[in-house]
Image (cartoon, rainbow, N blue to C red; front, side, top):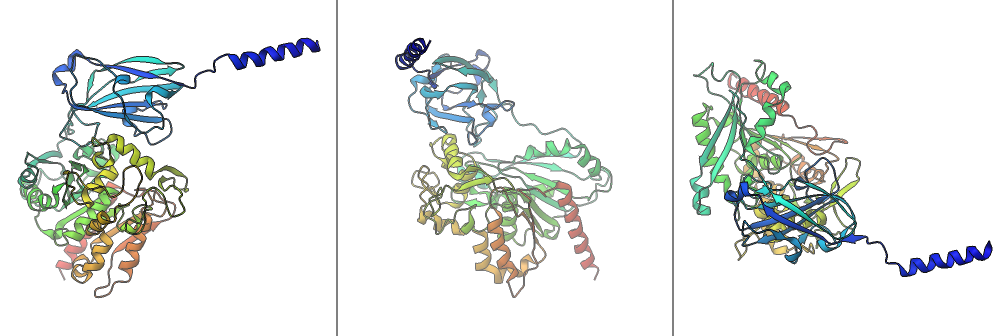
Length: 514
């Protein structure tokens, strides 16, 4: 028995040594064709995206490739003949969020989807007019070719049909001249319940700015909320017109402000859009009855509009605003740090955390994902968060694109570009102009932040509060509230904002009688 055991063991060792090891990765080739039914809509130039995800339930194209188990590959194609299928293995290098290539895809089960970004009117890939395939489930355990068909078109946006909802569009002469093409501003208007019954009445107005990239069609979700609409139509809700501004811009969210790269969005809002809306919808047209609010990107934009146009708005409700002090651009000190991805201790910087402090993903991961999204193969043209900040705050480069605040791959910060960002540093702007701005902002600033903001935005707002608390001549009466153990936009509520604006209107009316 013992001799047999020894012989068996030797044979097993020999087999392990001479037999080939089981593959841990496979070559994945996608053969992508265009369905005949959509060939009339197909454009030959665009950016091809491949999405691989190990997550069930969410279409791969709706995942960013930041979190584990989600991967994105992308490549520009200048001339794709619509009747010709493309083999991805023949296209060479791809921009990617993974640390492996398609020819060495780790074995496992994936949901695979492709998208053809051919739309030139919007900044992001999941835009109307772009074409995508249905997801296919694939198990890799050896090289495999998969046939995918671009068969679905993302439909145009539609506004919900409701007696209190209106679509308002305006061709901006300012932006159209700047861009040398037609630029149309879109909004959705939510009217108060008594609007039609009182044709002689003029109303206060609230301009609402969405979180990052939010569109005017977000009113659809609000109208679909039975609890909110039950209150809004009950007769107990404030009689205020809400205007839902559109966040779309050439490089991502336009932030509703003038910039070297986006053009005169601030002038277009203040001098074109607002007067046109207020004339058409029986708004009071009095600045004292004009208000602005939002959360996240909307929080920053609403605050910036109140600061840069202090006489245009009479109250700002800003929740979880983007960095209001660039010494704390999330966890980056744009002015003093050498690198955006790594701190002085060489530890990678997180971009998002849970309210208990657990990091979710890093700034480097986030920017890598945006590099894949951008048609320039950098975050500068991604249409996402860092690309939009960069377009708003940075100067224009000689190539016509925004100059990058940091190297897209190493994270090294460009100090010359950082100097240009100072123009949009809201705390720095307040400090430099408090004597002039202070009297104009009394009673107008209402800010909220969770002390465990998921994107580390509480640090910048703390500095903002320290400055305002120390102001004199005049002393600021800004309301800035921090709530312990609350995350990003946790306390934001459409109804709550409307009720707070109603209180502000009541105070204004009361002061008139004294």
